[in-house]
Image (cartoon, rainbow, N blue to C red; front, side, top):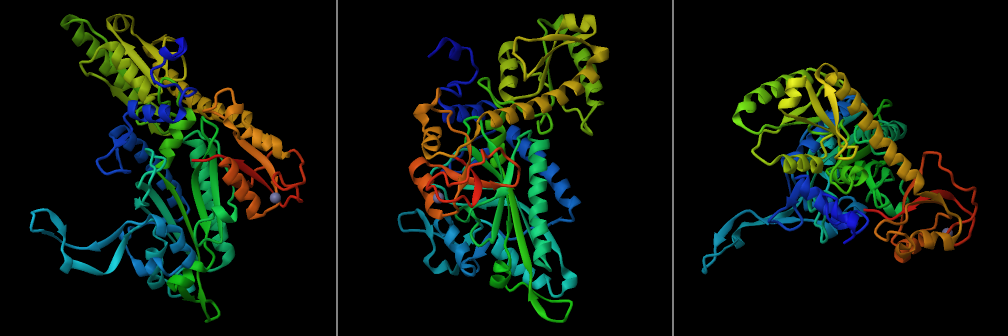
Length: 512
Ligand SMILES: [Zn+2]
């Protein structure tokens, strides 16, 4: 272990073992833990508070576009899933299936499914809800007057995973899924793009994660969709995280689920549908975008607490004086507004040693820590530390200035998170036109720190699935998006893999 590694609160460091560092940050911040059920996670209060903040902000943004929330069943009849051929192919390999509705005691006393209680038709635990929502839409929609129908549901999803990682890939996860039906193709396409825009805006403004938006190649499309659009962010190990998707489903699901309506001309037509989703994966994205070797770093706009106050007193004689002062400071801070919301203040009164307490909050990523002892109370001041500065870098702020100081610092920390992430992405994005350079770029041993290698290659692509498959098989690299955003593409004209004329410029990367 190097000298420097010993000083960090998280072991190992990012450079030593990125995957293990991630697990340790999640554990040290008390975001989530593995559950007795393999592949499923327990989301702890600090992690769930992040999800609640994501939900609250996104929900407001959805509703501003006319979307309303509803709830559909957890179970989907197997026959529903079979209606759309590509769709069933896409999800068949990872389905949880309910076959019985009762348990009985076997002769040896153990519980077994009652053979007489077998379901006539097995039920699938939802891997996504297009089919069950489609069946409902077909009843709700009769005429063009019923359109557009704009629905969202917040729920859990099950996709059986063999290799899981907290937040990034779990058998059960939480998400939202939007489902809309429209009269015309252009209305549906517009909605697909609008929701991708909502996602990009949310992730950039609240989670401080810069994203690339674009279209997926055919092989990365949602099963059953005509077009899939995504936002992709670069993580601290330079891999991509797909952070949200929006699908234009054409009339595929409308035909499969019989979502028809009487049009303006009195002719029966099929609706045009969309779906779009974002999940608890985003929490993994926050961790891997902003955190450092001392643990989690939270952008203030998504943090469950903006400020934590750590009272310091040695004996009972100073205790009450410090606590009274702490309560006054906390109340003054809570009266402040940051980005239109009350400043969120935690006071940590636990009987834990000061140093240990301080490090716990460093690892939880709270943007600002205040230490308040008898001397601070005497001087009408506080000792303040920012999570984006060295832990030892403390400054004294007078009580009169504190509110404005904290609000300004939160804004700076939020902007700093975004700026650092954007600079990192730019540093590690390269226009690559030659196959040799492409291979070298994605070869771990060529990097100074093999755990952290590669990045985003902006490269010409002929459009053939074979070239895409080659990158995946040889280098574990996929096309993340065919970007909407203008990127420096080097002006290359022939496919980075086969040398034939380019059809598209694509962003290639390794991905979670
Ligand atoms: Zn090619």
